[in-house]
Image 1 (spheres, rainbow, N blue to C red):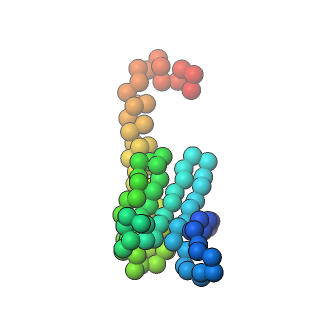
Image 2: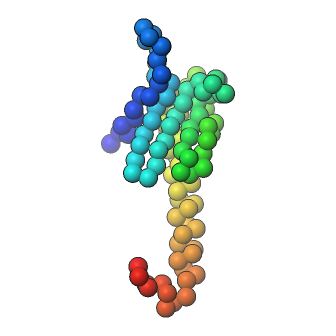
Image 3: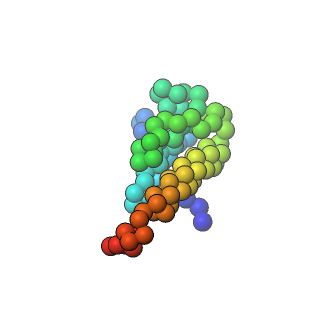
Amino acid sequence: MSIKWKDTTSYRKGTTEKPNVYEWQGESLKIVIVRKHINYPENWTMTCYELGFDNKFLISNNEPFSFAEYIAINIIREKLDGMRKEVWKLVANLPKEEKNHGI
């Protein structure tokens, strides 16, 4: 299954540039991968505010989008895995009588 990215590049009238901004919007996450960001013109960067990423460096912009996408998804996966582990530690440390209360 491939990810359905939306091209949100702002194009100048009459240009046929490659897409520079790719966006994916889920129910609780929005991921934006940018090639040639104004502040980082030589790089691919990724922003996902919900996970605390703002223009995180991914790779040189000489690489294809598929490589930047792969790196971005793995960074997000690692972040979510770490968060999941933290939540399970919290649950494991709840007093026994409260573990199933209201859950």
